[in-house]
Structures are given as C-alpha cells and as structure tokens.
Length: 146
Image 1 (spheres, rainbow, N blue to C red):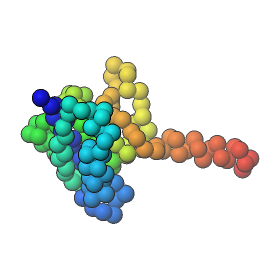
Image 2 (cartoon, helix red, strand yellow; image 1 turned 120 degrees about the vertical axis):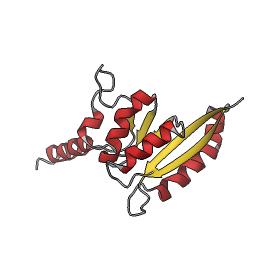
Image 3 (cartoon, rainbow, N blue to C red; image 1 turned 90 degrees about the vertical axis):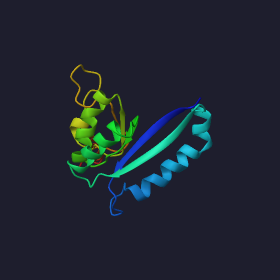
Image 4 (tube, rainbow, N blue to C red; image 1 turned 180 degrees about the vertical axis):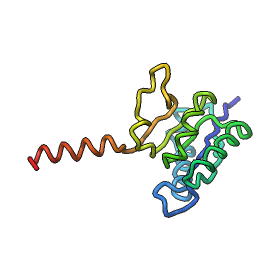
C-alpha cells in the first residue's frame, strides 16, 4: 500500500500578506502533483489541510493542535508570522512533526537545533532572517568604507 503524508498549511487567509493561503496553496498542490515528488516518493500520497493563522498567537496554535490531534498531520508548512510560528514550533518535537516556514526571521528561531534543550529542534526556515540581513548590510558598509 501507499503511505499517506498529511501536510498542514497554516498561513494568513488574507491576500495582503506575501505568504497567504491563496498564494501558497496552489504551489503546494502543483508540487505534490508534479513528476519530482512522484519520482522521489513513489509509495506516498498526500493530503493537504489548511487553516487561517490570522498572524496571531492564538489562532495558529489552536489550528495546529486541531490539525495534529484530529487530522493527524505529519508536517506543518507555516506559520510565517513569528508569534504564530513560535508555539507550533515549540510543540512540534512532542508531536514528532516537522515545521517548514518562510518566516521565523527572529534570532531565536535560528538557535542550535541539536543542543539537548533546543527550543525549536523541528523547525526549518527556508527564507531570509534578520541576522543574515544585518550581516549583509554590514558587509556592504565595510566594502564601500561608509
């Protein structure tokens, strides 16, 4: 038989945000229906469940709890807003779930993932961070002797 991979997508349901459900879900569906996924994970099929994070610290974790305990998700895509992301990323190790986000720009999200008391060991950030941005600006300033 085939193994189900259940993806939870928790993003704002507001198209004013760069990473909204309306913008990201089509890309996720395109990716899971594409030839690369079928080649890399031929014995798997995907279910996608989505929820509005509202970009706040209450709605996103409530959606995350529901998605984990009721929907039995394996991986979270999002949230992207730091206050929405933090609680889900903190609970992910207890749920044995992975969290992938284009958010999590705050410094704490980049702390060591391997130390015994790591706060966010199951979190992978795939976007820019404030640390990288500040180092880039500093390098430019040094290069041009400003």
